[in-house]
Length: 84
Image (tube, rainbow, N blue to C red; front, top):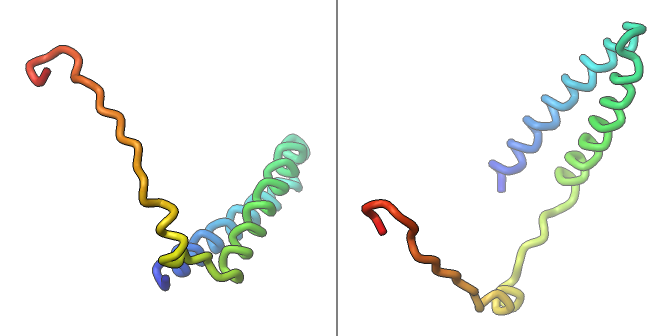
């Protein structure tokens, strides 16, 4: 669980750097529209990452795992080549 938290924290730090870089583009008159669109998208991703860091992950209990005891396996014949 610590590895996933560490990964999320790294992703959040990278995202914050991207947000800072994109905010710098707001001063460029030719890039304002694109920078605004990108900021909206980046802020949305930031909210999702922060939510993932603060809310505990849902863990499947053994009772719930019993619902996943069936599997459908599709076998297809090989086509051509020496392996077929």
